[in-house]
Image 1 (tube, one colour):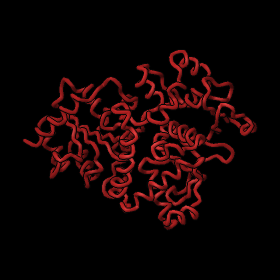
Image 2: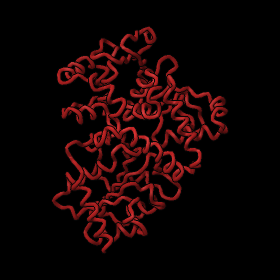
Image 3: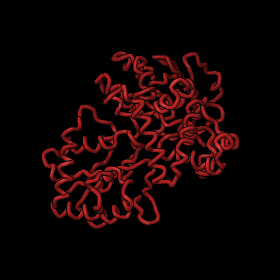
Image 4: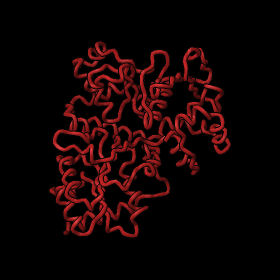
Length: 401
């Protein structure tokens, strides 16, 4: 009982300290009534804050019905999830929030047991992007509703910076009505004033805590993924972390990165198969985005047609002066579209979205020449406040989530 009390006190302190002045839009997308909810995401995007905010906003009056536990905490050492859930339920608990379950060896099987044995409990758990809900020992895919959490959208960043809550748009909304949308937004703020800064240091919510240390913290996030999460969850040799970081730097400085696997494996002194698997793991852990020519093959075995870093902040952290402008633009577009849309390779333009729309990304002088014979094709231009016809401002695609 003492350990349960200790866990509760720790949790109560965390909820008291967390601010609810700004809440991520994902909170409204989650069906919190489900019995088992999984929130996956890369390190640093704000999963823990989201849980604590939800609990503070919804259970402040009946806080004893809830419990938050981080599974990498020393307070949880030598405990089991099943034992925790049983004791919590016996004491009238109803809502159990488990953070960083990937740090607990038998999490999948024990969550399955909790789900089957304690129908009175609702469980929410978070984990790495590498978290596998479907596995041979405990199939949680039929039980858990899974949500993927990204870093801040440009829309969310603007809300943090200006206090103005802008509406979310769908892709189809933007394609049909981008001129009116851009006018509404430009009447309230000048988005281009904020856009370049967002690209450099606005994706991870912790940028607000100490902007001067942002790049250092971002490097720590990258190192934790390469040196802790990949060795723990994919068996990657920790000694190869510098080579993986080198690979990320190469991707960030390309325009964009079109991998020549043979040349790259020789340059990095890695076997071709090893390099392919590491490229795949970088995507899994949330450090890169891959475009495939064949959307229906085995992504792990296919050579990607193009590779981007997962977000533009990573590019500036890894290559402060070497990031390619065209690559930065395409990376932003791929990142913001990737939350709710399917992104594929297109042989004539930069992107094919939802197997329907073709997009060519460029600067404000970008012409429509490359798309003139294509249906459902658009030019996405940087450094413009307003678009015209099928030429749309790049920054507006930051309002998709």
